Image (cartoon, rainbow, N blue to C red; front, side, top):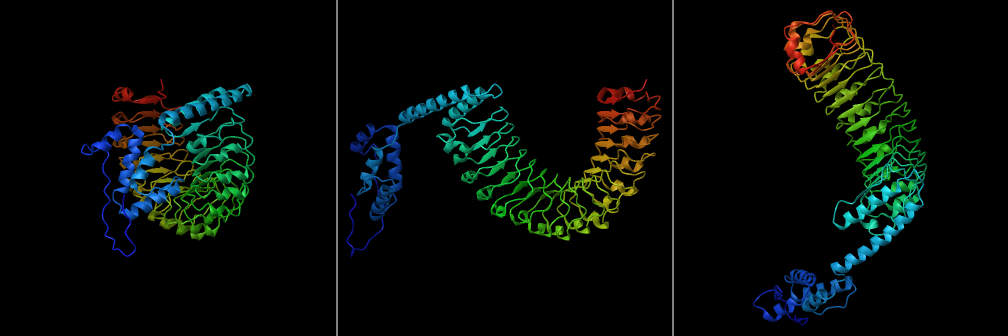
Amino acid sequence: MSVKPSSNAAIEPKAYQLQNPYDSNNSAESHESDSLTSEQQVVHKVAATVLNPLTPIKEDRTASAISNANKRPSSEDGNRLRNHAANNIPLSPQKMAASSDDLTRELEGILKEWVKKGNSLEKRATAKSRIMNFLEDSREGVEKVLDLSALRLTSLPDIFNKEPLISTLTTLKLCHNPFTSFPDQICQLSSLTTLDLSHNKLTSLPEEIRQLSSLTTLDLSYNKLKELPEKICQLSSLTTLKLSGNQLIQLPEKFPQLWNLTTLDLSWNELTSFSKEICQLPNLTTLNLSGNTLTSFSQQIAQLLKLTTLDLSHNKLTSLPEQIRQLWKLDELNLSWNRFSVLPKEICRLLSLKVLNLSWNQFSVLPDKIGQLLSLRVLNLSRNLFSVLPQGTCQLINLKILDLSSNQFSVLPKEIYSLLELTVLDLSSNQFSVFPEEICQLRNLKILDLFNNKLTLLPGKICQLTNLKSLLLSRNKLTSLPEQIGQLRNLEFLNLADNSDLQSLPNNDLADLVKHCEIDVIPK
């Protein structure tokens, strides 16, 4: 036993050495350890490890603190603490297993009654089986995920307010069911981090949802929600919130309290204006507002300095604020299906931009400095009013996908050969009557779509597109094909359908082409 020094005595710190009860040199304690269960021996070792490096005074203080914290009798020294821990294991594994088995039988009884009360459309028996599998897996340390999706469930069994689900369930999937009300009992799942209730028929959320304090991902998309309760704003751990496909017209005033949000999906709701609450989410990186009826966009968007993905498609926007230039981390911007005719030049300052979708608008020109977007990999200009490729487009030397379909192009600038990284070029549904030979210099091209034009001939130089895998030439006015087309050794699909004037095909190399390429349709 350690001896406490008097208050006047100098204290010399020294390591407090517990005798190792498993040391063969310590025969008395060695015999004592033989009578200990394996669980007690483990506790004994832990106690020794904790107390070894302590001075006598610190040892007594530590022992006392541990005793008080666990509401156990105080111990005067390390040995008493060690013996107390070794002889007071709450439950042996055998007893714990027996207790767990009893609990499992209780839950199974509740599940059986719940299955009996189900209607013929619900797949409650399947749900019961999945829950029982989860209970078994949870005992074996398997990932705590319970998937009850697509079982036509209208209610849940009364077990989600019981252990072990309360403390072990981390992911619950209830999507694609016909729930009309939020299952209140799941609000007691204190360890739940992911909840998927998408594709149900929910019309409201309970205030108790605030109790899901560990929740990081919440998917409520495709329900019938018209508003959100203020209490949802207390879910401060949320990083992903999906609300698409509802009937929301506004957000709660306290929505900015969800300051940890990084992904917010509000697509396909009934928002008519850009909510200022969104701009107060400092960690937001992905924002989807597509499919609403937005007519204007707030200047406060500039506050979202971490934003990397912004989807504003399928709205009624005609302009963007100049402040959009401050979103310097933005790498994906979708403005398709709006009413734009002029793109603000500030877009050209988004130097991190990799994907820009401007399709289904009324553009006929783009800012001259569009060529500054050297990080751009995908540019979609389809379904607009272009007849001339915008200046600067040919300066986008890292571009891999260029969609110019459904415009009024009849020629391309010679400079297009500069786009050497291009792998996909879509020129379908334009006015080309002559094949732009400059394309033949794009050696990395894999997909070339010229569907629905007015082409009558292909140049022999097309054989230079040695990496081409798909060549779409249907709905043109081709009368023949060059013999060199057979040299496209990597070609996998050639579409010649609806070329009524195409009478013959070259015989020399066609036989080899057919071996590795699907051809639709070979005329007789």
